Amino acid sequence: MTNAVRVERAGHVLTVTIDRPARRNAMTYAAWDELGAAFAAAAASDARVVVVTGTGGAFCSGGDLDGGDRAPHPHAQLQAVARTSQALVSLPQPTIAQVDGLAAGAGFGLALACDFVLASTRARFGTMFVARGLSPDFATSWLLPRLVGPRLATRLCLLPEIFDAARAGELGLLEEIAEPDALPGRVAALAERLAAGPPIAMRLTKQLLRDSHARGVEESLAAETMAQSINRLSADAQEGIAAFTERRPARFEGR
Image 1 (cartoon, rainbow, N blue to C red):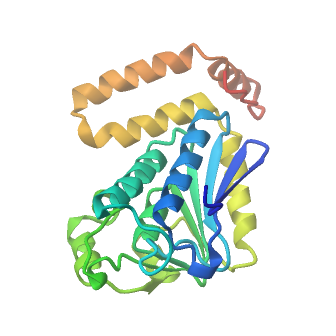
Image 2: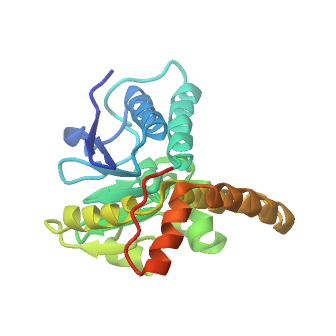
């Protein structure tokens, strides 16, 4: 345990915070595994939303290249990064990246791996791998082309530069930009809205969307049919239909 990650729960919302401010939240080998364990625990919990953020005016500046521990071999270190990435991408709950400050390298991938990205006006982004003689990790090579298209993803990776939140918004990478003091409140509002939704339907919807790239239309239709059958048998679906007919807000309990 490195104490690089803090996990806090408030109601239905779980917040995972990277806490290495002296290193701009750069991640060591052990810190990646600690973060991955936090995501695995979140997946097994009854939390409805997971927020990912960092302390000290930074989100995550990627791997700690000149400080902290080292794995016995680079491949072992990158396996820790891959495990953590897989744990985040596979989270069944909706995820929100709260980005205040730098999100670069693997930290950029960490933000992209979340379902929603809200950033402060002082947030900065960049792949930066090639600038260090490296290639993308933390699923950046999988996530970025799906978000911005293969041509722009190639440019962002092969001609790396740090860009601001306004540019990230233009590229379609952000849901919202707020002043630093207002960012936590905006994230909390989105988290509350997501947490009020039907957990079963939201988890199944997220799974359908995540798996759609690997499926043809026939497989997608079969997956939709199965998911919708599960939904229709849930108490939440009965509540949602009743709320619609009675013209009142639905109260979803996740069953």
